[in-house]
Image (cartoon, rainbow over all chains, first blue to last red; front, side, top):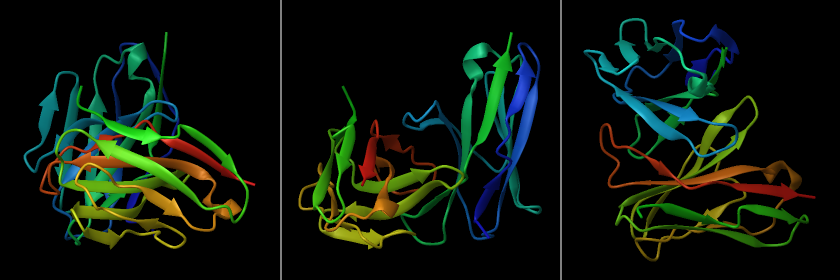
Length: 110
Length: 114
């Protein structure tokens, strides 16, 4: 079983709508979580870190649920430019090791 | 400009011909790492380095070597490439591998082994 799992999608979202998706992680020792954005076969770029208390950055909100071992990302008022693959990342119990999910594809349509 | 530079961007080679993919960062980062990305599998960590002369295996180290003789450089070496190493490779760095440390990625190297 993969340590970090994501629904591959695609999530087809009308422009202006809200979309949310989750990522589950299996290592209960994971402490740090992130969402990265990746455009088609380009380098991943940090979207936001995920804190225990949840955090918001503009139209993006990330939540962490330790009891059920998942993190979520919500995108409000979706823009065409939000079309991308969103990668969930959790640290491993070994220093320096990160586990990436396979990504959730979001397609925002006019 | 702060960046991670990978070369080459594209590489086609044949089975068994040794190759090196270079990675260099100009941000004085301590931590560097190599990943490969395959469809449906996401990014998988090959090797990482916490500092000069300190390297450790990631989840898929077989068939790869790395070295960290200088802080800025972290080359990935394939001594005898095989077709199953055809993949998109990314180098990444961060100041230090600590909680919530942002990873900076290079632009990627698409490798095809025939």
